Length: 343
Image 1 (tube, rainbow, N blue to C red):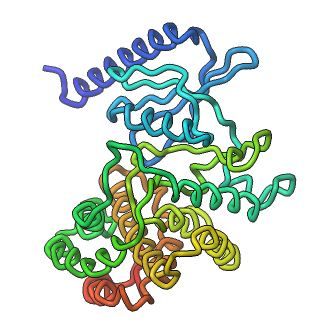
Image 2 (spheres, rainbow, N blue to C red):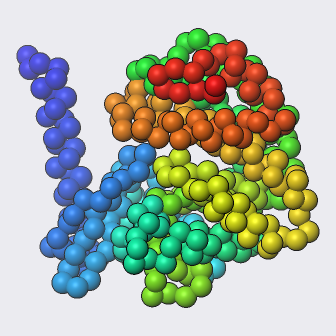
């Protein structure tokens, strides 16, 4: 009898061969047979991306074998209809979960913001904020999930279930998960009182591409929006300005906050800033749980490098009085240590 490991490896190899056969067939149908293929950096999901080159033309193949590709395509088309620079869908096979996309290039905000030959961080972030302000006033398309109290509770529970990144779910925190969710209830209710809009949910520098040949907010190329939800107005602004992956200077954050609020003069600014702090702490504690799971369960330890910045963001937001119960729970259950924590 063959060893279990050998049988597993053979099965995996067969799946890879079959997937490549499916991709070759898809590309042939789409008119891209024989194109050179180059792997691109992926994201925290199981999706894979490849850049295709055919002479002077290029496109991007999104292979989402384990994830339904239709939500991405639906939101991409909606954003395109609004005039935004989401990648055009060149071809798609929902059954195979393969999508061929317009190639928006490599001028990612996370790298281009510091380029001496680029427009500068203020121009890049200003364009992104202008887009968010316009999107904040647009109609939410039908079928988009709502970020409601149950949604927020499920998200924040991730932290208690997976922190810290020690290779397995932490039984100590998981036993107090319901108390953790309860500590958030009043803050979540305050956040839910804000106006709702379409939030792309992962709106940060690594998912934004600068397109200098375009005009206005169309210069901001959009990626990774398949998890879009109807969320409180500050959500994507928090994602952009309290970025886990790169530092956004305090003066730039303040300027972009003022720029956004100027587009909504009727808003209660104090209530907006309260919601911003709540969603900032919520988002980054959820991400702490996700990164902990990726590191501990999936062996993706590179995500741990973001934890110091993430905890700085969390500590800053937890200073808001609306989050006092959350801070108290963390003080009781999460001591600062190897992987960070609120001091």
